[in-house]
Image (cartoon, rainbow, N blue to C red):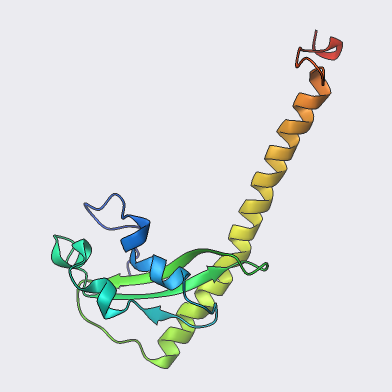
Length: 135
């Protein structure tokens, strides 16, 4: 049986400067998944605390413009090693997630633009007072 989970039980957030995914997002290329460097793991609260993380691998999620918007990651409480085929699958999954995030970004921009257009259409440009079309 395969189970998927979002987040870690008991962990509500991790500061960006110590998050495992931050190392993945900051890597220089969007083409290769990686494991968190040992220096990032040693003494990390998710490793030493109750979460007990012993494995992390992540692939950056990169949009068409090259911006990195997140990471698709695999965490486990058991030490693991991913083979080349598994790393390739992780990279392909991150690549597949990018268009969905790109679409969400576009929808958000459309909503913001629509709201701005509505405001300008119903308010006086100089005073900000509601114009006659809204009265």
